Length: 190
Image (cartoon, rainbow, N blue to C red; front, side, top):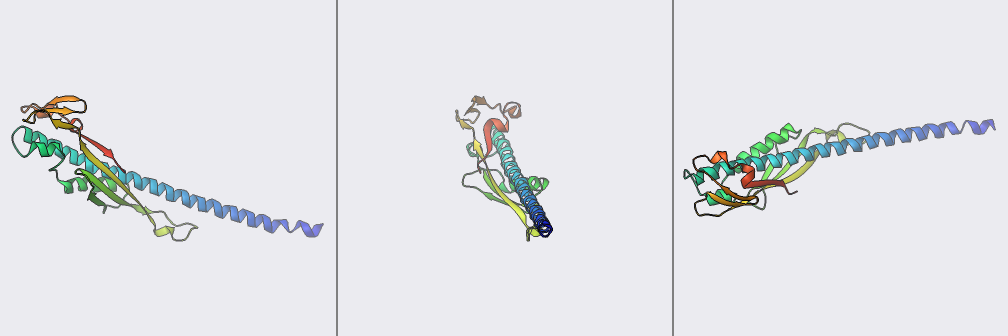
């Protein structure tokens, strides 16, 4: 009987070591998941920032054109004419503020006013019991689009049929009535 009593101890040590290794491996998987989620948040924020900057530019351009001081108001209202590079710079700033590397990819999507953003996390998953995690970065993509909410109701560009009804632009006080959200919607598509 005394000979059998000592055989359980090595099994116990092996089981505890295996459970400890599994716990550490699950911890690494959890850290990798958290890094991926944080990077996806940065990508979403960057894509939305690009689209919102673009939307604000469209509103400014439309109001200037509708008051007769510049450009094709129909093009602005349709979502064309804003500076895409400026919008992508806004995306890079938001990505960096949310823990992504400052060098991101910001590309034109399929439709005018759409932005496809790819980001990489600034921090790695970190060193762990799983080999190769110390230099691995999470990546994520997101796409946002600016869609017009209004169509011209009159040829002068001052009366618009929008999702919520009719909007009249006063050329003497265009900022008093029309917001960017009245004219365009911004949403994530991917």
